[in-house]
Length: 80
Image (cartoon, rainbow, N blue to C red; front, top):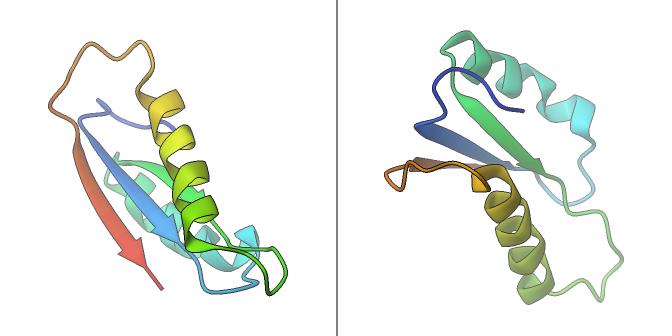
């Protein structure tokens, strides 16, 4: 979710099998500070690989920054 001036983005990575509503509290905390968030909750079965997780996360980050001419985006990883 984009907020504020988009110079900072927080990537929230939930625990295994967490649901988006579990992280909503933390999304709201960052949004109160006008900071954008990307959320990722690993949902796959036991064969889920970190490599796959990283690709999805990077794809979402690329989409978030698409059209953003500011190459100085700060990234904060908020990991559970």
